[in-house]
Amino acid sequence: MNSTQIFRKSLLALLGLLFSASLWAHGGAAGTDTDQCKFELEPSHWLHYTAYQPNAFPAEDFCANIPRANELTLLVFDYQDMKYRDMSVEFEVTKEPEGTRVFFLPAAKHKKGTVELKLPNGVPEAGKYLIHITLVPDQGERLDAHMGFSAGGGKAVSKNNLLLYAFFAFAGLYVLYLSHAGFKSKVDEAIAKLKS
Image 1 (cartoon, helix red, strand yellow):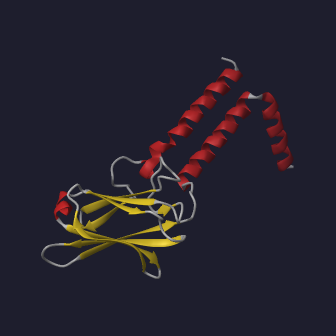
Image 2 (tube, rainbow, N blue to C red):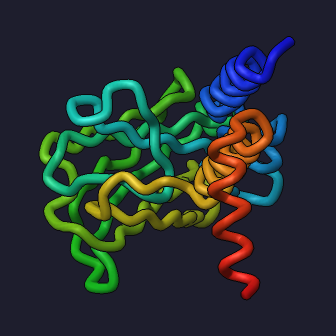
Image 3 (cartoon, rainbow, N blue to C red):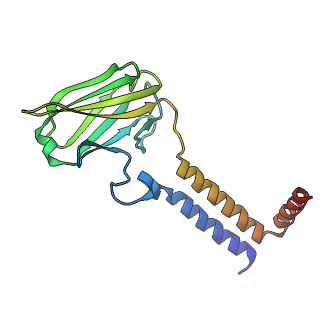
């Protein structure tokens, strides 16, 4: 194999790895133990949360950072415990730190185990928000759980993805250095100048 073939195959392999970065979703580990989009309602009883902005980002889901304010936003909650299907649950979204109510869904039983909050205009402005989930049992005291999110900061690239992109860029440059004599000589000259 000549250096051009090695370069092409290496570049194809790097591109394949780069586009498989979606395998790193929820932290790159299997299972829900690393799932940052779930929170505990009661000890060992979880609720999974996903946010969508289908008009602006039709194929993406979000968790703690929602890219746009004033944009159709869907907040979807999936009960990971069957017992919540028989309990009344109340949902509220507030702007923080003011505590101004942005959305409210009165207590109701959700037998399907999935609740979708549709905010037609999203949240009114960029900033921090808090989702309040209140379990309203037939007997006993109400139980509150909270989860914060930010909105309107634009679509961010995660630190893991930035590191991954930097690694692949460096690897690509290294392959180019090894396989292309002209590039290698220019890099070697630049390094020699830096040393002197």
